[in-house]
Image 1 (cartoon, rainbow, N blue to C red):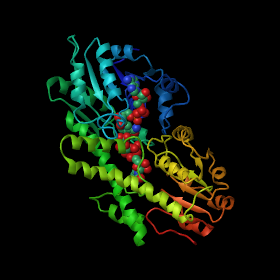
Image 2: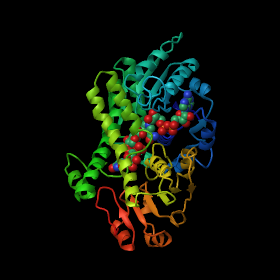
Image 3: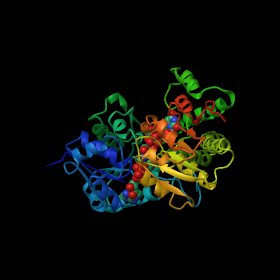
Length: 458
Ligand code: NAD
Ligand code: UGA
């Protein structure tokens, strides 16, 4: 079949693969190829057991793979063959040298830029989809312009706003698609080509265009604002616990103000995921770089409150359980950073587990999708850890259970049955406020919610 356009995605991770699977699905006349340096990942994308769990993803991969969607490790040849390239490689926080612990590590990004330059025999549109510091497109342009030939490269910024667990829904029904470009004739023509792709399924008023630096910065700012709401409500949850208010009631009352809105006001053990912390720290680093220490301190406090929320949670467990956890068995219900994903990157459960192990507790980890990743995250931790998927088996014989992920499954468990199998007095620390806390108290548990008075007989 002759395809109308050929699109390449470099980086077959949580963003690159699903976002390009969606393009393949919506544009059957386009050939979409997703490449990665990691052959195991590509093998998994070509298998029946995909490397990323997302509701609805399996179905659209099955519908398109082998027709107009392909996964490959042959990066060099694919760069030669394709004219539109999405770059979706990882951009983690730098762990070494200048900016360690804050700035974005751009080594994978730069390697890709050089690889595009080396292998290109024709002009290309190169699209930043990874989340990047402002002005990264300039670095990309400079690298690509350093070649000897007369081919040209147009760099666009098209940050991705999908969230894990709802990726397919978000990609299919985005709140907006943002495309930043140079305002030159070439830049505008490149932008039009990308608009044409999204127009296949996104209505025109939701496809917004901007200058390239605004697009890069908007992505960091969107994540910073979302994380800030979580930290804001979590900071108030600490006050509620002291002053007998109920954080769910406060969030409801505050969120009904249409100027504030009700989303992202759910108190819990803090935000996780690969991006919020990394992107805020990146923003903080940029503010310092541009000589704005007050602005940097403002955003850094969002991360500090997130850490404080986890420390509060563990202190609460320790104090409620008579100031010693040594030898006690505690079940962590949920290890993923949020429901409907197997992703555990920056999951609060990692820190909480480590703090429990430091107190010499024995920890049982349970999760419907994330046990493999949990075992990797905790591989180098000393202490007694076991991994049991079935929540009833996992909680049996435990002194306490701590809910770390808002899996729907945990709302619906038979807590009477669980209570019977646990050591008494039995404790629930509901880090997501998802269970019927009063009912569990009536069953016999001592219940410790977030941002609400504890329900305890002790
Ligand atoms: P990821 O680690 O899941 O995937 C990145 C992939 O890039 C990996 O498979 C890696 O092997 C591959 N890669 C690295 N260097 C490469 C190279 N030189 N050539 C080919 N492949 C290479 O990361 P992710 O979660 O998909 O995130 C990617 C980017 O998207 C980040 O900048 C992130 O901030 C951003 N983002 C992520 C999400 C999310 O929900 N995870 C949402 C929006 C934006
Ligand atoms: C987030 C953003 O929502 C996406 O728009 C963005 O594209 C993505 O980051 C990214 O750049 O990677 P994601 O991290 O997948 O998506 O998930 P969220 O739903 O934003 O949740 C992040 C964390 O905040 C989770 O740990 C979640 O449990 C927590 N959270 C969220 C709360 O504690 N309370 C809330 O009210 C909402």
